[in-house]
Length: 283
Image (cartoon, rainbow, N blue to C red; front, side, top):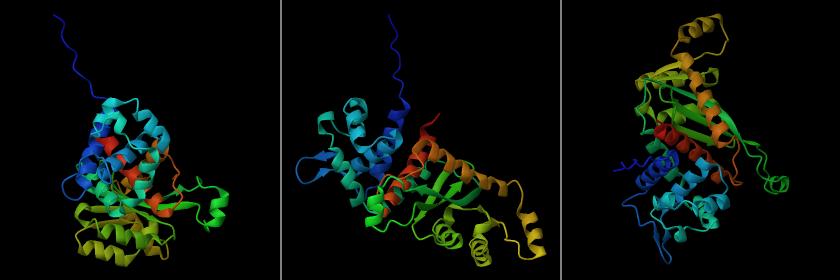
């Protein structure tokens, strides 16, 4: 008598199951049915999950739907039949209809898949906007060539806890204050470079029970002493931000494909969500 081989779940299947689960939780109230003929159409969580798959696989909208037509097992995890898959234009259009707050909830849920450590770090980078044509850039006064992206990372798990995107290049101290203020419940010790050197920010963090390890800019000899006290194993974990940025840009791309800035912000948040889920489903 032959022994049946256990069904091994692929990493893609595990990712799909997890992104579907988080997308349903990010929807306010009970998640609707995946698809209802008529005006209701596709539930929001289905659209969110499809965008997660698109980012994970690195496909365009058209390529994603072509591939899914050959993957009935993956499609079934979306609560759909292959014949019920939406048109790629529907997936593209519905992304901007979902509020940014919904994507932020999804990011927070993906971060909750990991047990945070004691040290967190904050740093910034840029995601290129080179996908748009020159004609489009001139017509829309497309002056910024990159989206300034600041992330708050847990150094133990390399999880992205929160993100801030901007087109106006605000100072790092302003972004840092805003980002940390809404994540005080997840931060114990924060490490940052000299770009976040602001005494008022340090004082506010201490008042809220957060230990700031932020390097001082050198204006006086005493600043060298301050930096010597800050420098240590915990502060050097700040490099985890650079590691996370490098991982995202290598695996998920260093440029955004959308043309409108509000869709670019959603796309970057989605990259962070996919990063967190990938780490959770990897043995």
